[in-house]
Image (cartoon, rainbow, N blue to C red):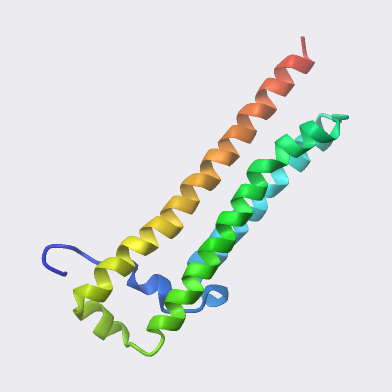
Length: 134
């Protein structure tokens, strides 16, 4: 507890991104969301021109760019605090509070973006299904 602020996300940066369960979990969900437009195209046997396909995959491109930024930020923070013990990080609010906020913004924000894109694809699939059955 740091002056009334409970710090929970210090553990996010205690490992490199490729050994972090948090990073690997979000990477897995990014791969799942990436497969959704492919599944929509194959399931409904859509024959789309390049501009429509580009428009369908632009959110995925954006998510990949965000994922790269999460990976880079996680790597940079891990390298910067690698030699500081977890106990020392938890004691020093000048380190703990910004790391807490950064972890929330990185993983919470990226998770929300993944959810928004995934839900948009689900709604798109529903509208395609309805329009094909008219």
